Length: 369
Ligand code: NAD
Ligand code: DAU
Image 1 (cartoon, rainbow, N blue to C red):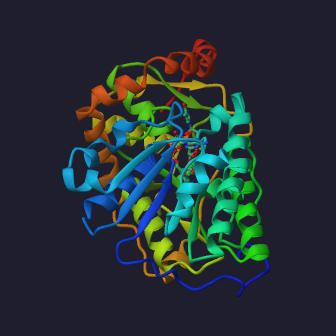
Image 2 (cartoon, rainbow, N blue to C red; image 1 turned 90 degrees about the vertical axis):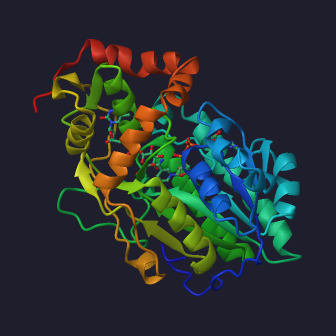
């Protein structure tokens, strides 16, 4: 793999059958469901089985646009199950041409409150999937794609060069550590067992159907309700924003064109401090900056993420949606789909919100613009 030695052990680009059958784990979540909707909407005969545990973050409603269409619905099968359960995983992998693993606990703040589920899904779950792929590849070709993140690289200083795929893995939160462990397990199965696997490392993704625990949908939905917006610390942390359909498209590109054994950065090419993101979304909504509250920072808060995307560009892939356009689409979608996010922001949400924000908001101060 490129993140270290072992160059040359991987296989070349993967030839999927004309009408492939894909196993998409975590396909009821934000990015997984976007991938499923986009692939099925192309009507090219691809069949998809979604395996999803339906944690608090999984939502069958995210697949409703595909299920509402008779032709697309006929090519989509949904199974509720856990990637860490070998009995659930083995038969599904055995009938797939490729496995795309989107399943993960994905929120950094929750990993700080309760790390355990992150390790079970991110480490044991990835291992269970890899074992099933290893067994299947002894009789026919199968490719595994691990959906990973730029957070495995750690945190950059203001003037540091952007990460390449050869940068060391230096995770700093339990979420990032679990994802890095997953990447290393994939690497070990490529090198030891010759598994045909690729890794994508995407940057901060945003767009329709994102769970409102994350920065953009949290601040959008709070602002719509004129509720306070809890900005961590000085709000000068920098993230690189990637529109969800671009992330999903990059994953499919790497599935088909990526070289086996390699990792590919998927950069958003829109690096911004959080304050600017918040100001842009408030402007779109026509809401005042006075909603923003400066709250106690996230422990171990990564300061800056930035990736070099040259490797995936060389495979022929480029982003299509610039940040202002993606943000506009996202704001419009959340305004038009209040029933979707009001349902998500109920039940378990209240307990989480109080735990994460009650004390922070009670001790908050004005966030000077
Ligand atoms: P999400 O939290 O919206 O969705 C995760 C999905 O996985 C949910 O449907 C959940 O029910 C399912 N899931 C969780 N544990 C499971 C298990 N044990 N078995 C089966 N299903 C399980 O997450 P997302 O934002 O769509 O992220 C998808 C993937 O992309 C994750 O692997 C994440 O690490 C990675 N990623 C996310 C971003 C981002 O900004 N959101 C950026 C880069 C990479
Ligand atoms: O970089 C890719 C990663 O991006 C993914 O791997 C993760 O799954 C995804 O959750 C995301 O992680 P972040 O921690 O960067 O995203 P989040 O939306 O939680 O926070 C973005 C920035 O906004 C971060 O600097 C923290 C800040 N923030 C976030 C929340 C939820 C706040 O200031 N206040 C908040 O309430």
